[in-house]
Amino acid sequence: MKKYFKELLEYSHFYNQELIKKFNDGDLHYVLSESSRRLMSHILNEQSAWSNRIMQKDLVDVWKVWDANELEKIEAQNYKETLEILEKEDLERIVQYKTPKGEQFSNSIKDIMFHIVNHSTYHRGQIAKEFRQKGVDPVISDFIYYKQNA
Image (cartoon, rainbow, N blue to C red; front, top):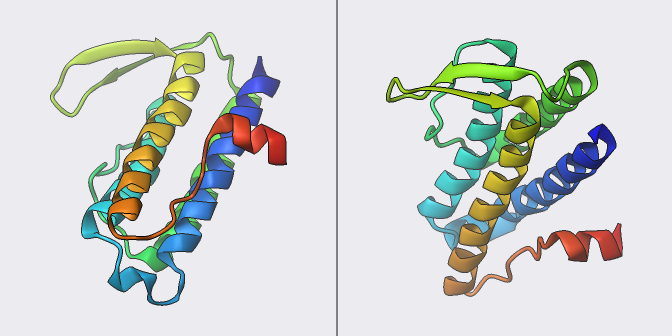
């Protein structure tokens, strides 16, 4: 199962990187909406927040908006930390945490790993829609497309 989650994390990392390239592509930053940058930052912040929950570290502000030139570094750090968790942790281990609203939850690391990938995919789809509305070709980030081209 760890091998499969590693593949899913690689897929998500690859397309996060491709999307970040768009945010740093010449003059595109004049066309791309603040909302798209906010969503990209949110993808990265949420992954960091989930890793921190697993490692019992302080949470981050999941809606902090990063400058486009910081996104690549944050994505690389997230990917490294998530792979380390995947390698070292028991995927069945239950993580107890509180939401920002103070609600108590518990989930397995396996479920958290799936959530990280699924959450990123969801928001990349929203960004793709915004790109199309601005006349920018979106990053095609379907998993099946990734598998055909990997």
